[in-house]
Image (cartoon, rainbow, N blue to C red; front, side, top):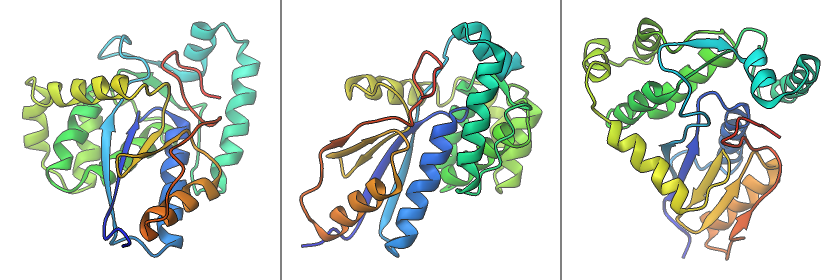
Amino acid sequence: MPNETVKIEIWSDVVCPFCFVGKRKLEQAIKKQNAENKVEIIWHSFQLDPDFPKDKAYPSAQYLSERKGYPIEQVKAMSNQLAENGKQYNIDFQFDKALTFNTFNAHRLIQWAKSKGKADALKEAFMIAYFTDGINLAEEENLLANLKSVGLSTEKAKSILDSDQYNQEVRKDIYQAQQLNVRGVPYFLINEKTAISGAQPDEVFENALKAELSAVEPLIETLGDGVCLPNGECK
């Protein structure tokens, strides 16, 4: 029997370029299968750099160069290649504007947005703010502006940010990723059995989704490039 609903759980960070590309690849696969009403997407929290100071931001290219020891020219060349790749998925990567920040509060708000059916919209808004607009999402007013843009209450969001609400939900997701041996993001878990690690080629997403929709025995795990690691490296 074909699956009536396909559950897709996604671990990602809002500052991970391959997470944005992977999001687009999945959306494209869903559209090709006309499965918009057959897929349930659940966003899970993952932090590439949980130790980054809160309430601060730093130019991402410079930060990656200093953290990884890469020459700035190499970082820019990698960024340019990613930006070219993003164009085919309608992503306007502007890495020269991007600012690295601690994403914990952004994840808390996405956790809350789940209860309002707005997690996907907020994830998208945060990624565009970071990758295209160079918005500093360490600043509360910028977080709230993005929430308002997707129709969420800024008053409620502010009360969340002023408390420890949804801290545990974020940490639970990160712990679950450790239990699943998630080595980098994006990480897609389909119907709790098929895993796709990284922004794999389009056909990987298409074939995995097609298999689940038709109840064909799927590939258990697909690994490869197109992944961001907890050490900050994306390859």
